[in-house]
Image (tube, rainbow, N blue to C red; front, side, top):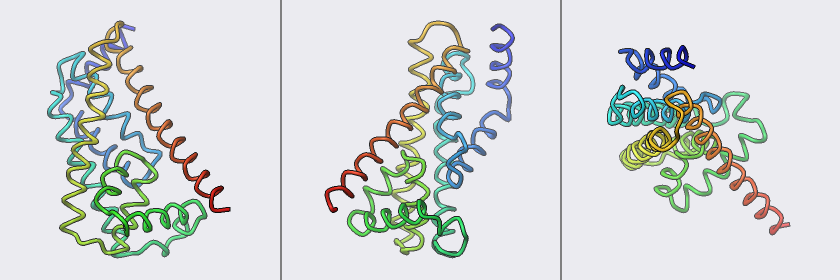
Length: 203
C-alpha cells in the first residue's frame, strides 16, 4: 500500500499531472470510453489527500479541456455533419442524434447544459448542435458554463471522498473512482428506462 501511495504522490506532484488529466478529459468529448470523469475525480481526491495539485487548478484545467473537447465536437458536427462516417449511421448513434436534435429544437440551453453530465448524450448533443447550426455565440456560452459546472462537480466528489473516507490516499482514489463511475452508470440507466417508457407509451 505504501508503494502505491508513493506512486500516487509522485503523480500528484508531477508538473505533467494536470496536462495528462486534460488530455483524457479532452478525448472524453469524442470517445465515451475514455475515463474523463474518473480522471477529474481522482485528481480531486489527490488534491485533498496530498495537497497537490491544487483543487482550483484541477477544476480550471478540467473545465478548459472539457470545453475544448465539446467545442471541437460541435465544430465536427457543423463542418462534417452527422452522416459522413459509418459510425454515425449506426442505429444507436442515429437514435441518439435524433433524440438530441428533437430536444435542441425545444430547449437548446437546458439540453446543452445537462448533456455535459451524460457521456453518450454529450457526444450526440454536441454533434447535433453543430449539424443543426445552433448559433456559435449561444452554444459556446452554454458549453463554457456547463464545462465548468461539470469539472467542479467531478473534482468535488473526489475531494469529499478523500476528506471523509478513512484509509489514506489509495482508498480515497479507489472509492472516488467507483463513486464517479457509479453515478455515471446510474444516470445512463435512468435515462434508458425513461426512453423505454416513452417508446412503450407511444406504442
